Image 1 (cartoon, rainbow, N blue to C red):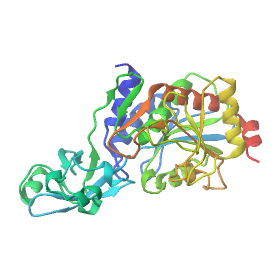
Image 2: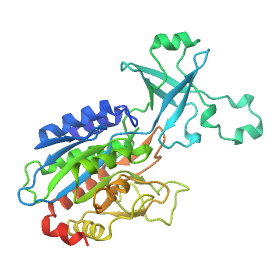
Image 3: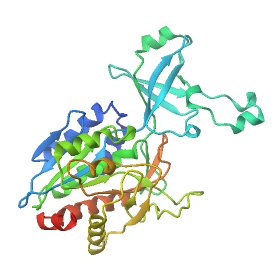
Image 4: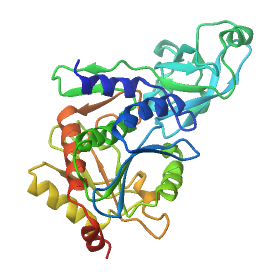
Length: 358
């Protein structure tokens, strides 16, 4: 496994839902520190590396988000079964019988599984109905509430999916949990690596926010802290190349290049900035796909309305099976996304930023 894959595995294996990003933040900080002139942290947990401009006063913020979707322990019954609430958006049909990890307050990892009924006891009608999340429970293999306490599990503990990082039949296809949004976190690090020995004419602040999955909360704080002139939210988009996923909202084929979002549920991609990004892609022969996502937002939704307004665009990759315990990303889409953001940063200076801000 090469250095890039080791980093991707390291970041996706880490557990960290909104509000519980400490472990993944520490990993990211360790990656950024040797690449940065300065480390910037906000009071909610966002962490960024800064590379100072050789010439120029403007700043661009490149931000992924640290948090993944998961759950929180809310109740433990007398028989030791654990109830939970979602932290981030889940579809109940992808949840039953899935293996989960509960992280206790002292960092112990407890394996559990979301319980399900065998089909033998379900009526034909019941088999057609999805189970409400409020009726689900996690079984950690105990017989009482006391045994749960002995294991160290308490109300408020974090729950995350268990998935092993896997190179698939075609080694470019990478399966993991938490590509949403450890993709963007990894990209923010690799862009800093690419530019470590380069002279750039815009201040680059690159890293990751917190609590995106529960309402773009960390992005608000980060943008207020950094006060950027431009921002790129790096986050995953939708793969449209699986059965039933054909869409009129643009393309999203794995292996065909990164996505530039024209619009999502929280932001209309800033038109002059988007045009500049697409021009850079054309000049550098980087394949891109265009997409509209109406059913969800990205951190650009908070970036663009911060301070006096920050022209913002979201750049991502198509991701299969988003917001479930497993997802698949194409390695070449990732590499091209890193190259695109790197080249966009290199193309900017004070005059170009003024030209983009209309």
